[in-house]
Length: 322
Ligand SMILES: Nc1ncnc2c1ncn2[C@@H]1O[C@H](COP(=O)(O)OP(=O)(O)O)[C@@H](O)[C@H]1O
Ligand SMILES: [Mg+2]
Image 1: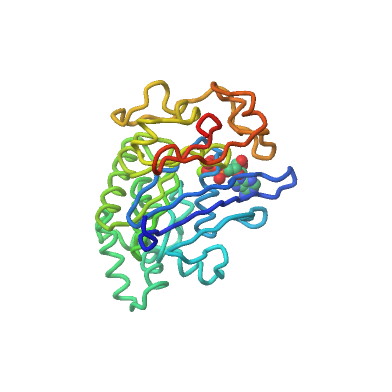
Image 2: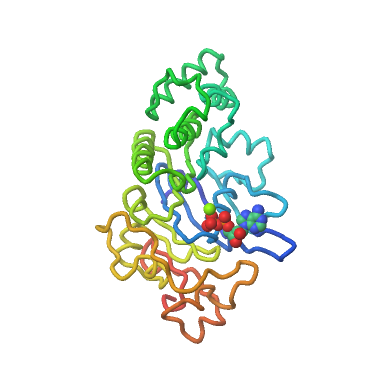
């Protein structure tokens, strides 16, 4: 991949929370890259560190207790971890924006949806009130909400419509990257499909890169170019859909797919795996997956696997692949 096409580079990133109960090792030494317009699915069980990763990129890790303890995040080659608060505020919305799981936490209940979209536009673009409002109306229409509803408040919208408003706000300044953190989990199943289709259409139309955090391997298959599987704060397997779905290497990924991994199986939700995710305050020695791993070897209990490229662009962290 040529440097100029690299949009986001995450290198050796670790984010920990320093709590009274101990150090929560939420994200541990993860690496990935996104090119312009590329979409990556980030998949893993609850507690794997997905939201912390997303917040890390956005510069929104709550501190205290959270802190980036190692690594680099580059956006168009610019170092985000050493950017000032003001620079990060200017990046957010304009260069990258995030869609959170629950639309209510991202909407202001006392502002009309039109004003909320226009506010983001005016923060980043020198537009008059009138022009910002006109642009807000266009964006609302783009997400399938009639412009007449500009003057309504969030509570007047259904859950699916609220999430469309959140998407409109995220896209208002045409960011280069959208991070969508389980964007449809809080919605009814029928509405989920509509919102995902909308996101997919807009992503394609606008050429926005996307990091899509989800539990649904079928959604990743429909939406993404590549996928990263997270376990106990690490990326244990990453690659193109073909790599990870049809040539699955890591025992954890195999477990997620059940016995028959295939791109042709749609809407495959995560299959529960025996045992529990380890407590990130007290991670097991060696490979963090070893206590649950059906293929565990003696050395897995003491040695941490390193990231290994098993075929071009297909990375696995498993001693059996080294
Ligand atoms: N503000 C916080 N303080 C302490 N621990 C946290 C905080 N936020 C998240 N964690 C912990 O970090 C780990 C990863 O959480 P998270 O990134 O939310 O995972 P995911 O999004 O994959 O469910 C979990 O063990 C979670 O309890
Ligand atoms: Mg989460």
